Image 1 (cartoon, rainbow, N blue to C red):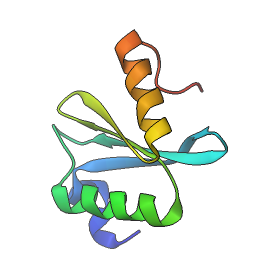
Image 2: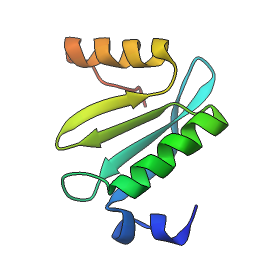
Image 3: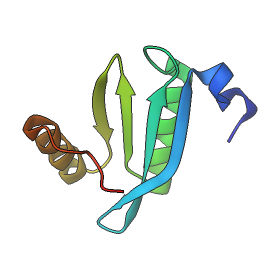
Image 4: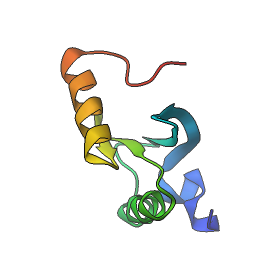
Length: 88
């Protein structure tokens, strides 16, 4: 990762391959503060697309899913039901 992606510069902590979804590693991003910096989030979305790694991130207390439509739908449904977003 680029040096500017350090938590103190990007306002986020990335938990790489925190869990898997349908055999794909899912990266999870939690903010340091209310939200990650836009540049960092844009970079991660591009990385996610290129490397086919779904991304789950939090902004201002809300979770968002980025990746295949089925991943987004499943995460949205879990949020709606109040379930854990991933199993440890």
